[in-house]
Amino acid sequence: MNSFFYQSAQTLLNQYTDRFPLLKITQLLDWQAIENTLASKKVAYLRDSARQWWTSRLSTVANVSCSITRTMAQSLRP
Image (cartoon, rainbow, N blue to C red; front, side, top):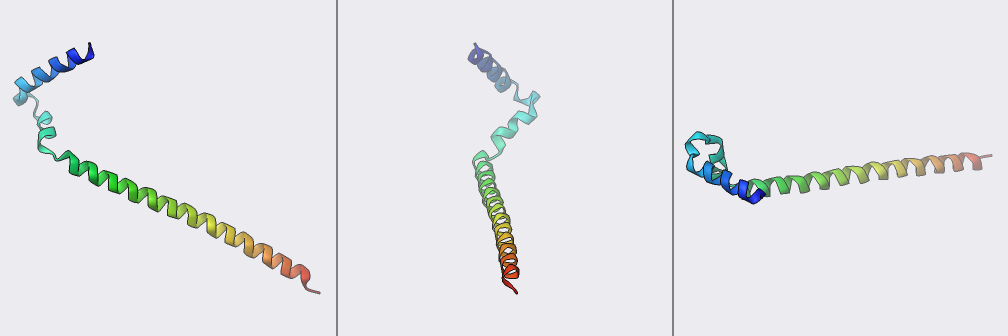
């Protein structure tokens, strides 16, 4: 049933393209280039987010490790 309505709507839109100028945008744009650009931006964002996450975790571990080392060194002093 949905395909019937979709096909009917497509037929009407194709007959009266002058009445719906925004629908021409799908024919004017190069959607593949847009999709590729968005995909590369997404990959870069995820990579940078992961890098920031790991960097923050490693710095936390390093700070805790230094604190433990200082505490141990102080406890060994006479």
